[in-house]
Length: 175
Image (cartoon, rainbow, N blue to C red):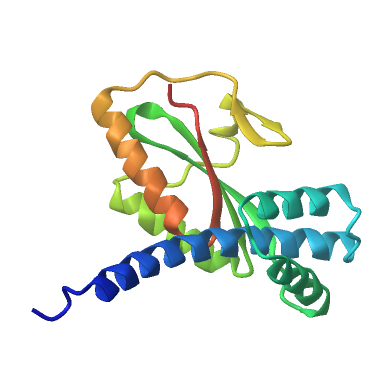
């Protein structure tokens, strides 16, 4: 009965939690490096300070944060923030914020995820009218009621989008 000892069980659980942490840490460190590049490494810049505080609240080690700031100032890779819009199940507006060094790759990955759910990207401005941009992100001005079935489909779509490394945040106006 190989694979049924205590260590194997602990190892599988640890691998799962480490993978989840790694994905979260990667997204937070990517946003830190973008803000560090914008501020020129000035740690007192408000956006960089906010990104660092958000990472610290998620228990990102200080060494990783320092490394991300230092690497951002040395690196030539240009990270850019892109906002995609779509309409989801039940006619809900969806805003997808991505942070990438390759705009074409990110767009294709998001299009692929949306097409798996029989959806497509919307034109610029077609979904943002339902939201207001704040410091915390996009807050819906109006909400759309959806059925329980559409809510499950929307939940699956959001989970799949958030698993993508390029996607930073997903906002929707569903009730």
